[in-house]
Image (tube, rainbow, N blue to C red; front, side):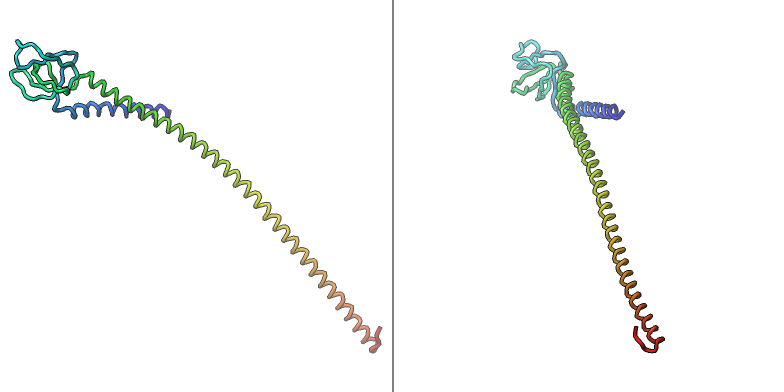
Length: 200
């Protein structure tokens, strides 16, 4: 479905460019006339049908208008040929063949741009997949580090707890020894007093 949407968007874009192309072509040649489609028209030295043509212009040629007289137009070709042609064979519209050629050129350019964009999308997709893989690896590494840190903290806590318990046991033993010695001395003192100051 996303591929179909992207193709529809691309087709719409190309159609828009083609329509704009018709507009651009007609605007850029507003001061030019053309020989009508599929014609060869004789260029005469004067506006008179009885005079033989000195040259020929064909469909699609760009002709600059110099003046007009009695159904004839004095024109100048891109190669510098000047003469008179019948106005009825001229048109201000760009010939279909030339429009088609211009549209083909634009289509080729747009096709090239679309191909480049598709290649860019493909490359970006590959980069995205590589980044997703890297992100998964980083998350896995993070989980491993957190687990190791928890184990280290647990061991440290157990060691500290063990050291604290040992310290408490030693303190308890010392207190017990001191209490025992104190008790023995106190008991001896009491016995000595009962015996009237005789020492045991």
